[in-house]
Amino acid sequence: MKILDRYIIRNILVTFIFITILLQIISVIIDLSQRMHRLENNQGSIKEALIYYYPFWSIWLAYTFSPISVFLSIIFFTSRLNKHSEINAILASGISFKRITIPYLISASLIGMGALIINYSFLPLANKMKNKFHYQYLLSSRYKNKYENNQTISTKISNNEYLFIRNFSRKKNIGQDCIYQKFNGNKLIYLLKAKNIFWYKKHRVYILSNYSETYLNKNKDIFFKGIHKIQNFSMTPEELLPEEYIAETMSISELRKFIDREKERGNGNINTHLNEYYQRTSYPFSNFILTLLGLSISSKKGEPTHNFIMGIILAFIYIFCTEISKVYSIKDYIPSYLSVWLPNVIFGMITFFLYWNRNRN
Image 1 (tube, helix red, strand yellow):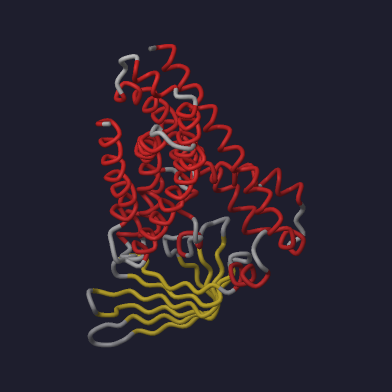
Image 2 (cartoon, helix red, strand yellow):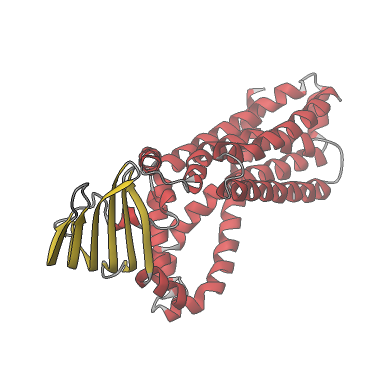
């Protein structure tokens, strides 16, 4: 049986690698054809994109669609075995269907462990490079201007501190109409206003110009005015105005600290980051579910083409369920951990029924 185990594991892994590479090549060609005009508009080149963007984008793509690649690999390989009646021959020799499942689970474990290592370490580095190129060369001119120059900061620094800045430029680190408020419970005790604010990166401080500050006391308010003031808000512009996809550029430990810090600040809109945190484990785990599901479907008698079509349909349903559940989480309808694991739970129940039925027959 060891020879058969090695044969199954080797072919599943080879098929998985082939399908993954094929999907990436097709995706890169389609994506590049759609983004060529943006590259040209932002003074980028196809050569630069192929060197500095698409290799890292491919790692992200492989991670995102690895469960689907596993599923299609199992469907394709097992259907080929079934076409030549090899599954029936193995079962007729006295080997149980449960025993056949073992090399499939070993293959899922190897792919899952590889995905887990990539998710926890290499993926954040790849996403940093991918996003850096994306923001520089692949944004539309309108969104690029908005992203770089016209940002509004409205955030809670701590439980009793709030900061508001209008028209902040990421590129120049300059903003207008800065307002800083400090409370004691529900009572405002300090108010700082400035016409302009500049982030001095070298010394990691903010420089306020044309400012006024008010200390609100019980007996008498104290008021000051000035031209320049150095202020430390304990947060950098990157922390005050995090990028949309900042969570995917962090390692698992950095992401956990970032989420904890956002919770301490009272930021209620953290479900997007929580989704990223939980799915780094749920995606590799889904390999086991989709492996058993693919085996249960494709090991039955029938046309391999029909099995493959059914596999593609189920793969798209899985992707649809995953994306819908994330949207519900972002809208705060369901908790993040539930939204990320719900597709696995649903497909896990479907898999259990189909596998039990296949094993019984």
